[in-house]
Amino acid sequence: MFYLFVSPWVLGFVLLTALPLGYALLVSFTNFNGVSSRWRWVGTRNYTELVRDTDAISSLMRTLAFTAISVPLMVAGGLGLAVLLNRRLKAVGLFRTIFFLPSVVPVVAMAIMWKLIFNRDGGILNAILEKISIGPIAWLVDPNAFYALIILTLWGLGGGMVIMLAALQGVPVELEEAAVVDGANRWHVFRHVTVPMISPIIFFQIVTGIIASFQIVIQPLLLAETNQVGAVAQVPQSTHLYMVQVYQEFFANNRYGYGSAMLWVFFLVILTITLLVQRSSRLWVHYQVDSEAER
Amino acid sequence: MTVVRDPARPAIKPAPPTPARRPRRPADAAGTYLLLMTLAVLFAGPFAWLVLAALKTKAEWVALPMKILPEAPQWGNFTRALTEINFPAYLGNSLFLSFVYAILITFSSAVVGFGFARLRGRGKRPLFVLLLSTMMLPQILTLIPTYVLFAQVGLVNTYWPWVLWGLAASPYLVFLFRQFFAAIPAELEDAAIIDGCGYGRIFIRIFLPLSRPVLLTSFLLSFTWIWGDYIAPALLLDPDHTTLSVAISAFYRDPHGNPDATVQAAAATLYVIPVVVIFLFAQRYFIRGVVSSGVKG
Image (tube, rainbow over all chains, first blue to last red):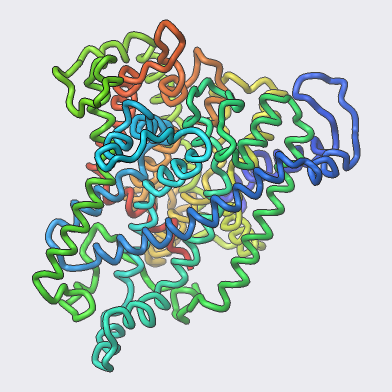
C-alpha cells in the first residue's frame, strides 16, 4: 500500500529528475548539438575544455560573488524585518503584508517593474538621485547591472521574513525574560538567546538562499536592455552569471554536450558548497533536543 | 525543531508583554514606526511606479525633467495591452496550465504525503530523506536536460509536460501534506479499518475532507508557481501557444521594434493583479505554505 501511495513521486523522481540528470551526464561526453544525429563520443574533452574556459570560470566566480553578497543581505534583512515586526505595535499586519507581497510577484513582472525604476531617463531612481545631484546613472549596463540585480533580489526578502517571524514566535518568552532578569540588555538577549534559539532556521535560510542564488538565470536575461527571448548576447558582463553562460552554450551556441558538462560541474559545485555549509553548521547551529524531532 | 505557528494567527501562547518585545519608551516606538514606514515605501514603491507608468503617455514616460504623475490617466494603455497582442489567448493558456497543474499536483502530493505519514513500507525512511534532499536540487539543473528529452519524444509545444510534472508530486507539497496528515489522530483510521475501509477510501473519505486548508494552500501556491513561471514556457512552447508571462515580457513592441514601456507596464499590471488579489485574500494560506517550507528541522 505504501509503495502504491508514494509511486507518483517515485516515478516522477526517476523519470523527471534522475533520468534528465543521467541523460545530461551521457550528453556531456558527446559533441551533441541538439538537432543533428551525427554526434559522437568525445570522452572528457568537454570537461578539460571547461577547466580552461575563462568565460565559464569568470561567470562561476561572478556567481559565487553574487551569492556571497546577496545571501547574507537577504538573511540579515529578513531577520531584521522579522525582529521589527515581532513587537506589539499597531498595524503590524499591514507592514507584514507590504513586506511579504513582493516575494509573490512573478519574476517577469518583477523584471518589468524594476526596469521601469532603473530606466536611465524615465526611471524614478535616477530622478531621485538627480535631486541630490547624482547621475544620471545607467543602471542596467556594466558595471551597475550587478547592483541592480542585487537590489531586485533583495526586494523579495519578505518570504524569508515570514519564516524568521514564525521562528521568533516559537522562542519561549521565559528564556528571554530570564536573561533580562539576569541583567542582559536587549542586544545581549538577541545575540545570546534569540539567535541561538532560531539558528536552525537561519541555517536553513542560508542553504536555500545559496541554492536559489545559484539558479538565477531569468532575471539577468529579462533585465538586459532588450529582452528578446534567448537574447543572451545582450546580458551585460556583470550579470552574466554561470547559468546565463550555460543557457548561452545550449541555446545560442547549440553546444548541448558542452552545456551538459557545465551543468554537471555546477551540480558538483553546489553539492560541495552545501555540504561545506552543512559542516560549518555544527559550529554554530543550536539544535534543541525535543520530542518533535524524534517523530 | 520547535513547533512553529502560523504567524497570521495569534501565537498559541499569546505573548505577554515582555521586556524584550515591548517598546519601552514612546520615542522608541516612534523611531520604529518611522523606520517601518520608510521601508514600506521602498517595498511598495515598485508597485506604485508600475501603475503610474501604465497610466502615462509615451511622451510623459520619457519626458525630462521627469513627470511623476501623468497629466491625465491613459486608460487607453490597458486597452492597447489587451489588443496589441492576443492577450485573451495567452491569458487562457496561463489559466489552463496553472489550473491543470495545480489540481494535479495538489492531488498527487496529497496521495504521496498520505503514504509517508500513515503507511508503512520497507525503505520508507531513506525514501523520505531522498525526497527532502531533492528539495535542495536546483530545478534549473534538470529543466534544460528535461527540455532536450521532451524535444526528442515530441512533447515540445504541447501541454503534456505540465500534466507530467503535475502527476509527479512536488517534494515540497508532499512535505506540507505529510506534516498535516501525521498530526491527525490514529483513532480515526483505526475505526475506519475496523469498519472494513481500505486505505484508499480512508484517504478520500476521511483525510482529504479534513485537509481542506492544506489543499487550498497547495492549490494556491502551485497555481502561482505556474502563473509566474517564465523559463519552462519560454523553452517548451512556441510564441503562439505560450503563456502570459512570456508574452508580456517580450511581445510589446513599438513600430521600431523597441519595447513599448507604457503598454507593457499596463500589461504587467493586469498580469500581477490576480496574484496580488489572491494573495491578499488568502495571505494566511500563503504564509502557512512558505513557513512550513522553511521550517523543517
